Length: 120
Image 1: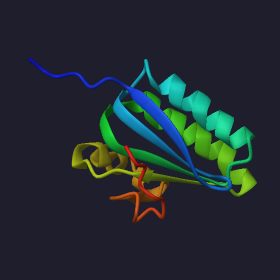
Image 2 (image 1 turned 90 degrees about the vertical axis):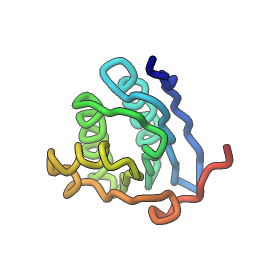
Image 3 (image 1 turned 180 degrees about the vertical axis):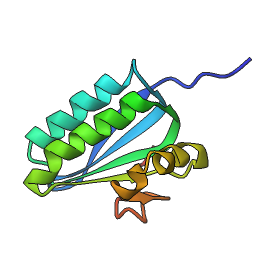
């Protein structure tokens, strides 16, 4: 029997205007709207840099990719930076296949992305 990981979204303010959104579990058609809402909230609140931490994500789908692209489209005109942290080769492969690894800066760790790791 497969163990299911419950979806969780946690936002941490790392410094003025900079945030880390840590995602756990599957980010798909059912959970991506929560990510979209949080991204829009941060962008409208004046965020300058958002790090999406996919380290604990177990799956992403095309809905997630659409949410990330939509946020980037809203964020770039304001000079905002959206970066991803992904160490899972299977999830990273999705970005490579769709050529989105050319659109989003993708880092292996929070430290390499310039974000402090969250104390869990």
